Image 1 (tube, one colour):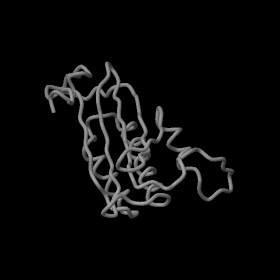
Image 2 (tube, rainbow, N blue to C red):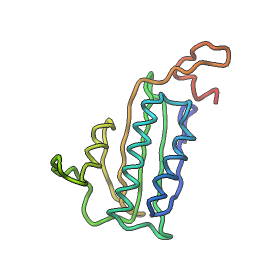
Image 3 (cartoon, one colour):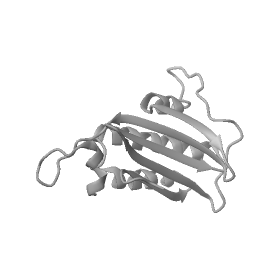
Image 4 (tube, rainbow, N blue to C red):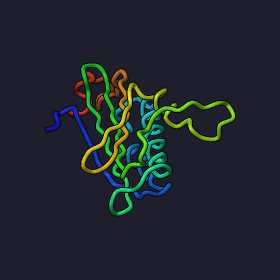
Length: 158
């Protein structure tokens, strides 16, 4: 069960390049005004990279889709955001691979590793998931009267 300061979503998008655009739009719409803009930009960039990798390197889930999930919660004075992309798997476990300045590809998981606090992959009964987690100081968005709310009160008023 989700607590009062926790929100989660799960959607399916087509196993096509436009799936990344759809996932970015949905995530941005859900989290704008809830977390700091810089954190939101990082989360959206990583989600787009994970969906793009799924389209390029993995099989789709039944129905030719990818499952995209994300969760936001407050932990003390920190926002914790996790994104997870589940597909039918691509055989190899996703991992960082060496690249050089002239490489045309292979940088995606390096971007994920640089922006996320931590990331990884796992398999379940549905398929293979790659996830990334972000931990950043909580946003202090102005309340209705212009005062800064306490970070733990942010989602309770939404």
